[in-house]
Image (cartoon, rainbow, N blue to C red; front, side, top):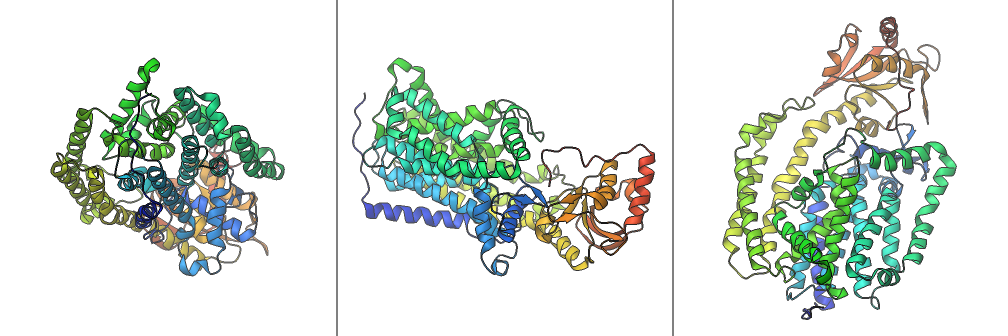
Length: 612
């Protein structure tokens, strides 16, 4: 085994200063203006609505949305969001509901940044006398990944899975690096939280990573003993299994079929929601997720591949110096697992981003001995930044190609905002700084290149969120307010066309969602009379419990359908591409009968794995 020089290790006081610096960056990147915009359709309002329902009903076992159970994710993310909704008077300081819904993603991401930084300072890798700087670089490379910036500020479970699984893996490696100084059980507690965040996928990924790394180290049984796998799995079972058992006893087969059958097994073995991508999909995502530092990631991957390819003579470092190799197998395990999966989404790559950040930050240390590779990565980073800058400065050409029917004036608004030109300037600044510091022997060169990206968070990222919210979500919030202010007693609420669950979240009432087809028209008429949901049921047109009218939110594309014309609605207001109608249900019934004569049938009772 190659002998390695001991590295400088920061004192406890210096580590604290480094962690405070990381905390500061985490807060300004992920918490600043977190609640200034509304929830983005379509998935975040489902998480937020289920969490608020828990807080309001006191049922903390079964997530429910729009009067239906939501079995797609375990409860941890709902519990954390629900805690925010449970705070008395939360609507006064969180009128949009986004602080409560987004804070778990933001805080868990910051926590992972801190653990990453602490690991880099406590266990210096190779000959590196700037460990605090390395720690800050690593945490920022992770935080400034385009994927992490987006998912760390939205109300879904992906960031929480990335953080709980990432912290678990870092603590596992730390236990391997220092069995006497690191407790064994902490990593298993975080793995339990990961299982309560997204299910058995956390166990599978963790197991694959440990398997690959242990085989590389040629110490499979020894690593299992150090990590205390059997008692560790028992901890995972004790913490995570009770909810699954209780939910199965409460909900029975629908929970079993939906959570395990559809959202886990079927997503892995077949394409769900048209998210089938080619096998090389995550190669593209890998490159995009590390922009502009992708070249540094690629040379670290190449260095590890070269080491593995010479298997019999591979370099096996001391445990405390093996984070570079551990991170490689971490990244490769995520890549292999989700490449095999039939359903592929960009967010599936999030669990690999902490490993990528370690590989990038260590690419300029002695982990990469070939100076020409470091030089090549630096030059290619400059080149890519220049290319992106040119592409963005020529945005007038490709902005015209954007066509979003829900935001017909988006092209003009984006062009007038100069956001794309600001992004082009940021990449130009990165290239300029790269050229200046290219030949200088400064380890913190990566940190210098990160400064423009931090600035871009304020100049580009947050204003982009604001623009998207104003154009896409504000009309829905305004429509929700008018629906509530206009609603008569027992009057049902319907949304036709683009199905936006944020309408349910902002009205806090059951919404009858249907599409644009003829079947959808019949479904609306039939559901208003016959459907039963938890806390809501269809009502007759006449009688003391009936309603002769319905409030309907409909988009322009649906209005153009002939079967929605000639119904003589009372138009109460228009917001963007949406209009609010008060429609007599008798008119719906007459039109429904004519469609039935054409052979159209209802299909809302047919089993659908994803409904809201």
